[in-house]
Length: 123
Image 1 (cartoon, rainbow, N blue to C red):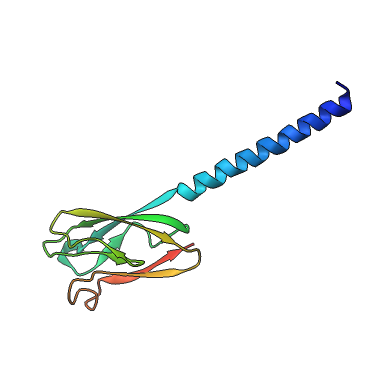
Image 2: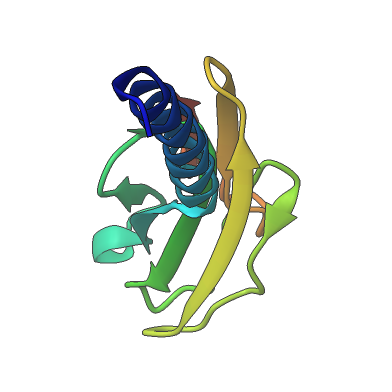
């Protein structure tokens, strides 16, 4: 095989490998999930405590634990947990769009009005 043909063959192989690698990387980034821990009713107060209030766009898993003796739930991006008793946990997974803000709240009567709400940002 001539040197020229060998160079062309290696170039073609590099292109194929590069396309394959980028496809694998793209698929991996689409399946990556960010986890946010949420405590509801911290110190029996009507508030949430989140480990972060922003995350990269894509799938975000909210792991919600009721730290209060009062029942609470958590709603964001059209999904919500069940009403949780003291010490109980539930998970909500949502897909968030880059640059958008998403309101979250407790839907138990009067809790959001008392301050159990906030905004989460997808970056």
